[in-house]
Image (cartoon, rainbow, N blue to C red; front, side, top):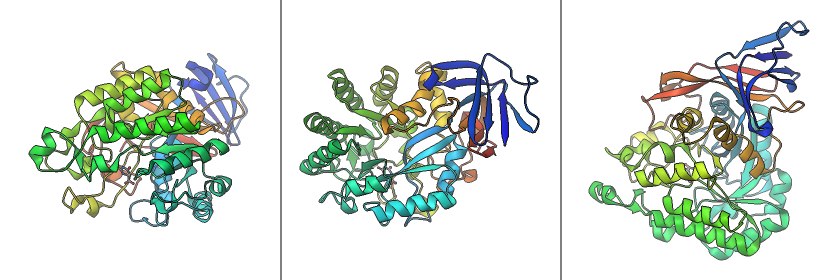
Length: 432
Ligand code: DOR
């Protein structure tokens, strides 16, 4: 099949290109990337599907380094099939699947199961992340070498920290030898002490146990120090605090090979979103203060934070709706809102369009050491077409994801993915 995408505003950080370009796709690959040229009526073969992208952005398929696909074990929350369809709907063509499934992805058997399922039923590319420790229990290292051989792209106990510093040291030493990436869920469990929202006046007023910012900062500091000691590569997941951004920035200034991500909810919302005991705004780490939000934006702007990831964490309706705030599971279904929420950063002048798309494509590809996130000729055709001006009221009920849990339900958002192309597949979307 041949496709011509014409008239769009193409942004491809891998080629440092932003401007008018026409793209021809043939047999699932980018055949031609024609800058400042119109290919239409210009010796094009017949039988070509023409997509008029006038007024739209055309960007490489987004890469999410932090997705919970829930399969195996929690298919009531999400499956590989539904999660990857939600990914495409959000403009993501690659997702990295966190290991906190049941069973945990802590051995090659589970990794192989995920990859097999993804080949059979997946709609987008799935890169499994293996657990650092067996059962994510933080006690004994998982067979990292074998899991890497089986196809794990990185290692993390996400959902839980690796609390024992000796285990983390060993994991990083091991990772160094294999040139593997360790993703840190940075939370000191003794300091967070079972807190369910940000610690402060609001948590005290609401009578809820708070999780202080220092629980994140201390752990980021520890993992950076261990990375420096061992030479193992560490990536800090879901940074939410001012102090965390500072520690990462200082480490980068010293030349430490640390990388970091934040998620749209940490620059879009503050802790006030949990007012009224709104379980949809319960997430781990918790939503913080306006000062933290500003620091996250500053970190995105100056490069302390390399990427935006979704931490797509779908949960069943009843788990969020009919439980007390204390008992509701943390997490936000994020794949289908990440791009509009992130586009607000361009609108507010925090990031240029190039920098935003870099943090959603090229930077994750660089950190993961994969080839994706590019529209270069010869590469697989993976791209999203975005109407950045389209306003819509979010209806979580219409998510492709089984997880309808989002604090953004009913809000007006701006910027909608209208088409996603993944190889031979062309998907067309209405905004949620
Ligand atoms: O809010 C969260 N939900 N944070 C995590 O670290 C885990 C995730 C989940 O698995 O639901």
